[in-house]
Amino acid sequence: MQILFSFLICLLATTVGGISGVGGGVIIKPVLDAVSGMPVATVSFLSGCTVLAMTVTSMLRSRGGDVKVEPRRGTLLAIGAAAGGVAGKELFELVRAAGGMTVSVAQQVMMIALTLGVLAYTLNRSRIAARDVKQPAACVCIGLVLGLLSAFLGIGGGPINLAVLYYFFSMDSKTAALNSLYVILFSQAASFISTILRGTVPEFEWPVLLVMVIGGVAGGNLGRSISKKLSNSGVDRLFFWLLIVITAISCYNLVNCFV
Image (cartoon, rainbow, N blue to C red; front, side, top):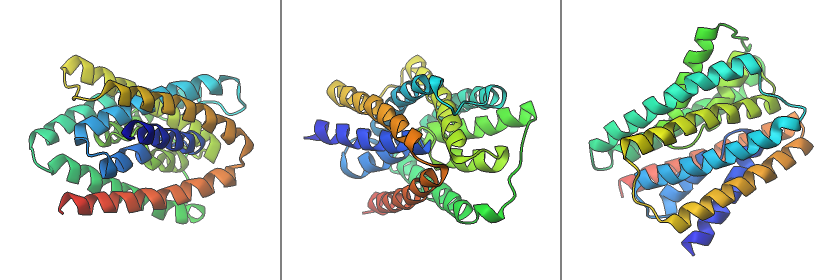
């Protein structure tokens, strides 16, 4: 039953993530935290692997599409995200070493704060003048912060990526979604390699990982197909309701940390 549930959650999450650019981990991680009973390190690892598989699939499928990754700024962001992915994994291990509920509480509080911040920005986006950052160092630094948050939270990228790309780079919804997936790909790949090299892979069940990755790949393909048929406003509406759901689940998980 857990295997079927994990597959369905990953399929749904990565389908939505492929459309909106949030990656899927931002749904997978809090839902599994809430219902799976698995340790936080295991959930983070499985979620990261699923998102990595999903983003590889989505990026391969996007090569022939009309929406493209910005070759210069997108690559600079990805380089920063790779470095941030390693730093975020180190931070995760440091916080986890504190023991108890520390890492779980830290993740949930950060998720709630970031999601509410993005929600506030989304509601007021039309009244906030976007920037158009072009300096290479600034692009790398922004990617570094995104990669660090992504790896520490175990969510891939999440809504913070889109808000940053909207504001700092004046991207429309579909362009931001694709560039977000590109950044997530690099941050999660770096985080995964760091975990392997450090020998900090948590205990997990191989069948669960396998079905989650399959669900992630299938969801990535389905999400890219649906995205082509949606308008930018349709992607925006999906993103808004996704923020509401993520905030509610994260609040539930935070309360459960103390129950």
